[in-house]
Image (cartoon, rainbow, N blue to C red; front, side, top):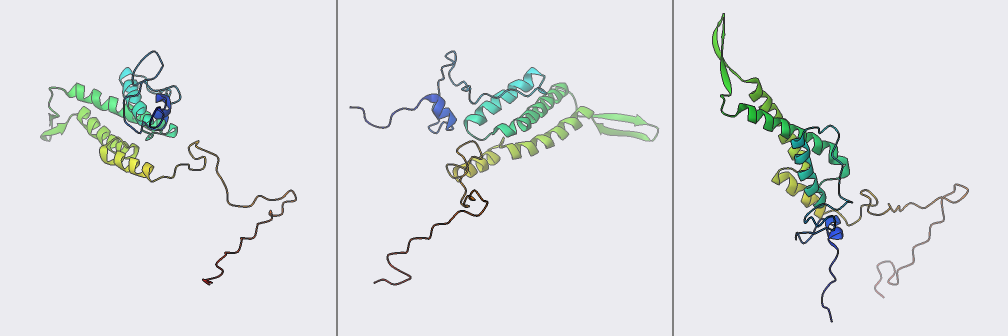
Length: 194
């Protein structure tokens, strides 16, 4: 006689966020750790470079399994992937070079930053802001996970869980409010113990 709880399919575990954090195996071509079709998200059209698409896919696949990313966040994750690609491109161009150069003019000489280095710093500020909002750094991710753990099981259809239930009475056919039931009296009474 079998003991314990029955094992759930890996696709269902992935939809729940993989609570056991074990490696999941899916039926699509025998690839271990692949995302099931229900979690797969199309890469946004504005990500044209292969590196952008790779960065986007790697992050979104992981974050969808952990229930950190929502379908509405896909554009923001795409922007982040695009900015990371640009930052890496600037870093590759600066490899082995100084981040400043000497400018000689009629007024004398001065040192100035390379425009690529300025772009890299600007991109880094944007990336830090997006990472804080999207949970792409450890502190922000922990805050998101803490918020998810304190949420009730169903949010009334907010994320496609179940339909919202309202406490307001439904109006009758003539538009008048529906009859509300009287509360049943307490067997104890109003504050009496006997």
